[in-house]
Image 1 (cartoon, rainbow, N blue to C red):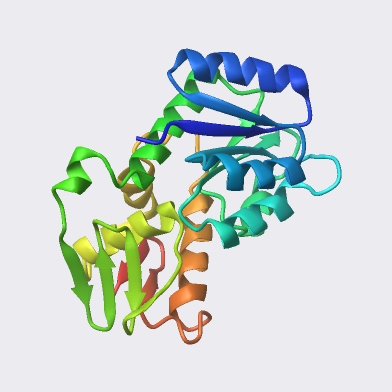
Image 2: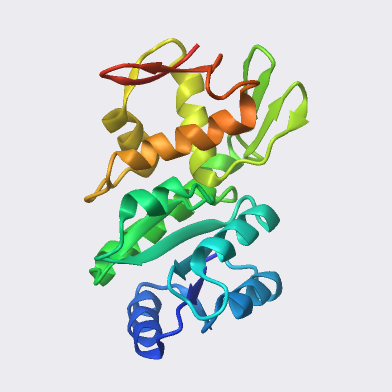
Length: 230
């Protein structure tokens, strides 16, 4: 299992505080004081997870997230925001973050969120090694072993979180899933997450698979409930 975590934060005291707690939990920590350094270290060190602060000197966390997501589709990204910042704006930017956490945060909560995300992206654990199943629906295909998603036999890059959401849809075809059900199946530990994180991920998936995301053919909105794969 890849247990490398890259912390990108320009405040050294925050990096050290986070590093101590994550190392105690068994993670191998890499540090960067800027987005530019973090992007370079991603290429050199191949971390499983990036803890990415939004407010950084030079390139900010939003732009860094966009670049990292384009270069490393299966990388786990957790954005860190100050309590005073608007979470809706963070989610609305849709740059590909898998999760977010608000400062000041409980170190144990961060540890649990990292473990939850690693479970989503780790294809070398026992469950996935023994599972070579391919899920199909129409012109779509999900390869559970390689964590790959295809439309018309063309691979579409999806984040670890998007992949799990699609897997849940495939396993519950035609069923209207509430946002709470999707959160529970995808993130496992819900903590105090805003349900809007589900909406953001659905919008991202629609943008990748729908001919017209404004009139979705595959992921239907069930008003007052949630979403349904049809």
